[in-house]
Every structure is written in structure tokens, then in C-alpha cells.
Amino acid sequence: MSEEIIIAGFGGQGVLSMGKILAYSGIMQDQEVSWMPSYGPEMRGGTANVTVILSDERISSPYLKVYDTAIILNQQSMDKFENTVKPDGILLYDPNGITHHPTRKDIKIYQIEGAKLAAEMDNKKIFNMIVLGAFLKIKPIVKLENVIKGLKKSLSERYHHLIPLNKEAIDTGMKHLKKFNIEKHIIHN
Amino acid sequence: MAELKLMKGNEALAEAAIRAGVDAYFGYPITPQSEVIEYLMAERPEKRTGMVVLQAESEVAAINMVYGAASTGKKVMTSSSSPGISLKQEGISYMAGAELPAVIVNVVRGGPGLGTIQPSQADYFQSVKGGGHGDYKLYVLAPASVQEMSDFVADAFDIAFKYRTPVLILSDGLIGQMMEKVVLRDQVERITDEDLIKTHGSWATTGKTNRNRNIVTSLDLQSEKMEARVHRLQKKYKQMELEDLRYEKIDCDDAEYLIVAYGSSARISQKAVEIARKKGIKVGLLRPLTLFPFPKKQLFELADQVKGILSVELNSGQMVEDVQLSVEHKVPVEHFGRTGGIIHTPEEVLDALEQKIITHGHFRNHKTRESSIL
Image 1 (tube, helix red, strand yellow):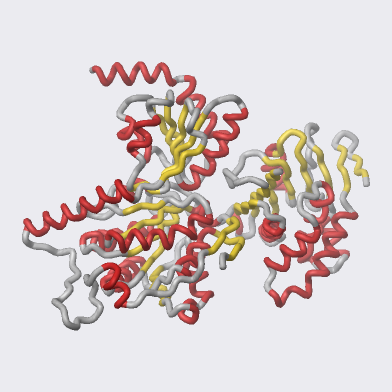
Image 2 (tube, chains in turn brown, blue):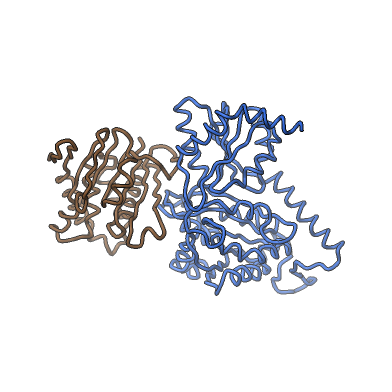
């Protein structure tokens, strides 16, 4: 098994930490992982993205042109990464702030209203965990128990009391995932 | 007890320095290697092992602190990125001349000048052909993973003390900034002056007791003595070629075409090899782990087996010259690489191989032979 993912959005949305939690979860189930961020001027107020690979075998390139899954959290990233999803791959996005919705017919497209749900839960910081939950609903590549173990590893102990809240956010994401039909612009639950 | 962690390359290198029993680190921050000094400062290694970590006022000051501390036989290191490494070249040349062990880390960014902060391999020439003034070389390790960023620190010090020479770890922004799983080595105790003298002889300025003065200098105004020193250095470099060459062959056994790449480019090229093999193209990868010494003999031999070689580097063509020298015109050798901080994708590498080597290989081969006859 190998899963090549790009997560892209604004700096501050938790893009890099979502990738880190995924990578840690992979380690918890004995997988090889790589986490390759875009770094530098892009991150300051602009876009941020991270390539995460989980694999049962040694990972060759941490830097890729095409991905199994793109998790897209703003319009700039949609413009940049929609075409990098492999045929039959997955595109998961938050429609918040998206004016040009994806149009590709050869991939599977899903929506998660992460920003809206996070606002409803009254905690903007768990936005990325809601999105992660939605992704894991589509592709359960890591077990929930390993995500929790990964969270324990990646968060310092003084934040461990927030783990139940993170779990709740993941559950919320799983519950609210929607499939997006590009032809009819209809969203199925 | 081996410990498994998810770390950035730069952090893994910094942690490895503490665990390798390094006595002192002198540095100055610069992207994309600032995590090294940040991590070291945060870890308070003076409490863990007694290791000194100091932010100098400049790169020049940092390398001269390394020069001074190395003279006393301590395990010392510094790290920087390309423009900072240029500033350090005078000190590195002095240390090579004075035959001092030290480890210098370059997390390369795009150049020339201040260039860009994105990954690059544009410092190959500077790293393997000397770098500063004078007739010297560095032993150059090229890590291609976070694990190697960690492992190569202790390895570099072993070589530095074995030969009493500065060793360079040539990384880049991609390997420095990415996170991977890493197994950390166990903590090694810092060595004492007595241990140093027992293992490596008495050459350092450890405090004179019942012995003659140890003088650490790169200056020899008598030409005969200076030539003897140069010969001594050259002898070391020969010995490194015989005893401490490191490389990795991937899918080379049945390869009809070969990619040569190190560091981040090797990782990307390995993916290109995977894609190529799915398409039925038999490509192998030779990854030098040491850039000096360089796997000359291995390339010379592989040139009898393959139809062409592509040197893949994040620069305009530097290592390709060493590949060409190694294969002695037996097969066509071409270069491919993006520059300016742009990272080539595996697909671009494969396209380049198909266009430059597979499609045009025979034509170029013919031309090469013709020009060599002329």
C-alpha cells in the first residue's frame, strides 16, 4: 500500500500539522512516511502545502508531480493542484471561499465544509482535524486508534487534554463528508 | 536503546550531533538550515552532555571558532547554507592545511549570490573541488534521507579524526526541511583528552605536559616542508579513495541505461526509475554517498553495460563532469537538472532520460566517437 497526498491551503489553516499527524499515524502502524513542506516566502500569509506519503515500502521521491489524493483548502490551491490528481484519484475540498469548483470528470470529488463546521463547533483550530476526518472516511488508510496515538506523539503533553476534542472533530468530518457531482453540481450526502 | 522519531532532516542532524558526543557547535542562522541551531539551542545540550552551542556574530567568526576548538582536539562542527558556506571557505582551507578534524554542514540553497532559499545542488563544484584556496579536498558525504542526516554526523567525525581533515556533509533544502522516520543512535560520551591521545596520537593543543610542543598551523615558509605537507594531504585523499568510498546501486544489475544522482535528486531519480521500469525501460541508479571520493571505478565498469548515462542534479551540470571523466567516453553522458530552487519531478527526469539518452543516444554516441578521433 502506498498513498501519495498533497494538502494545500492558506498558511495558518493547519495544513502542515494535518500532514504531520497523518505521518505520525503512519509510523504508529509501522509504515514508511515522508512529509515535504513548501517552505519559505510562500508560507507568510500566502499558500502553504505539504506532500505526505505513507507506504509499506521504502519511499523514493518525497517530491511528486501527481498525487493519489489532493486535499484543497483555498482557491489558489484548487487552481494549482486540481490537475495534479491522478486519474481515478481523490479530490477533497472545502467549498468555503471557492469560486471555481473542480471540473474534472476522471477523478472522484468530495466536499467537506470544514470552516463552517469548525465555526459551529466554536473552535477554528480543529478545522484541519475535521478535514482529516473527512479524508479518512473516503480512504481509511490509517486506523483511528493510530491517529490518536499519533496525536499523542506529535502534541506536547500539556495539550493532551485536547485529544478528545480532536477525536470529536474527526468524527464530525467523517459524518459530514459529501460527494460532489460536477455535472449537476449536486452534492450527495 | 534505539529511538524512533518523526523529524526534519535539520533537526535529526542536530540531535545526532548531541548524541555523537560533539563538544561544540558554532553557527549562524540562515534559511534553510536554521533549524539546526534552533534545535540545539532549545535542547540545552550543555545540560545533556556539556556540549557548547554558540551563535557567533557571523559565519566567518563561527568557522574560526571551529578552527580554534578543533586545534584543541575537540569534536567541533558548524552548519550553514550556500552563501554562508562561501564565507567559511577561508577557515575551511586553513583547517585542511593545518590538518584539523571538523565537520561542516551545507544545507544548499539556490545561487549564485544570495540566490533563493529553495533547495539546490549548485554547490557541488565548491564542495568536491576544494572550495577555498590551495591544494586540498574535503571528504564529502551526501545524505539523501533524514536517516542519513542523522547517521552521517557520527560517520563524518570518524573520518575527520581518522584522517585529521575537515569533512563536509552536503545536504540541501529538501532533505533539511522534510520529515521522515528516523532511528536515532544511542548517546556516545564525549571523549577526554587522554582518550584522544590514546586513539589518535598527540597532535592537539591539549595543554603541554611531558612532551614537545604541538604546533597547529597551516603556514610553512620552507617550500620543501610545504610540499611535503601537500604530499601528505594527497596521500590521505588516495587512502580515502581506497578505504572510504561509499555508494549505492539501485536496480543496476540488468540496467540498459543509468542515472547518476545524489541527495534529493537521487530520491527523485529513484522514483523515475520505478516509473521507467513499469514502462519496461531498464534503468538503474547509481547514488554516490560520498562525492569525494567519487565512485569512478564503478562508473567505468557500468559504462560497459549501459547504453548511456544521465547525471541528474539540481544545477546546470556539475557532477556530470566527474561522470564523464569516470566513463572515459565509453558511452554518451548527459546532464539534466532544474535550477533556481525549482525541484525537478520524477516525470521530468524520465522525460530527460528518454529524450537525451534513449532517443538520441546512438546519434550522440556516433558524434562523440567522431570528435574523439578528430
